[in-house]
Image (cartoon, rainbow, N blue to C red; front, side, top):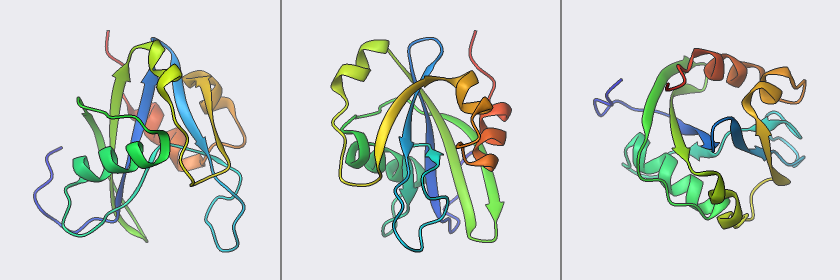
Length: 137
């Protein structure tokens, strides 16, 4: 998946901390928000002419205070809201101690990726994205 400069809506990150855990955001309950209170991946909407990679890096820094260097493309998804890109990043477990939660959402969690798939609070189509991802090793 290579971004060819097409118009897109946003980008999200499957953020792994160690072998099995993921860092997940909890959406707030603001009026009009999609998927209130659900578990979400870091990331969000495009600003200006930024690439999907720049978008997901900026959003991850804004939401969690983490800088992500290496991104693995996962998939490009089309929906009624537009095109979105999904990436994965694998970081050492110690990155959890570096999280500095921003001002978007109700909080953040660390959970095994299997628990995200089993949760009734996880955004359903994001479960499909995680299932589509081929874990390294």
